[in-house]
Image: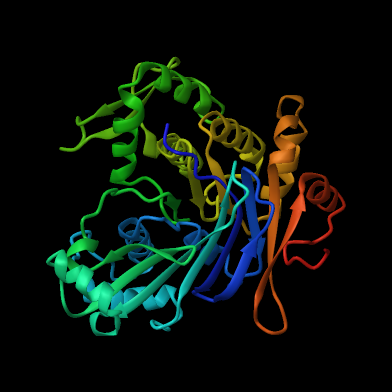
Length: 364
């Protein structure tokens, strides 16, 4: 299992529309609500923060790829274009300003402050310029420096940055459905592990009740696709024929397994799910995330999504999840800053039951 990366406190400065924004008393399962354009998706992107500069920059690059109408090739290796054109989209077009992430991780009591600086080589201190020269690195262009609690811990030049260590980032965009990468997730992390595959099949039974097993096939195309075998039929069926809800659940469960011990961000978690399936949907996701020790941050616009979350947590075998589930409502204040209002289970279940609108954070 990877090192636990769960957060109990998170603050970011100078990221997209957030001049300064914080989440306090974060739990394992966190639902983000709020009006359109208040910053829900931006928060998920900020939560992709990594202490590894390479991974942090590529997390942002991947976010841009998913948002860009023209797309951005995975083979892009133009460092200066990345720094000068893409990163300012996330860092408020203020390249000379510090970009600060403050975090407290579960099991720790100390706050760690990580500060990114994007500078030119000429603006570096003489010591840092000498450090790059000693490494035989670039002596011009953009440089990224990372400090932890005011101590320099990493400095990256053009040659350094693209030694990418991890091709995966823990974020599910709302528009992502059945794609080639889903087959890869399943093949790499589930298909060849008998116990894990058995648990996975059992988890998805509430969406595909007669499911017997899941296989990969190339009988339709020249690359693997996912097929489902059912006890009531001799014919295998493609996963894509079961509808958006089954595909969405399949993807979320796959990515939970990939992110064991870490955090997973899911944008508009309810997309593609019919309201009649929400309750079971929540049970499956929460139980699987608990089993694999994954911290969930998920956005939703849908009041039914919250209503059925409450119903799921009212089940006798789900009551232990109540204290670990929170709703954070984002609201824009008169000064245009964004504040989060936290609702624990007892509070958001009461407000939901009474039909009181709280998704804009007005009822604190």
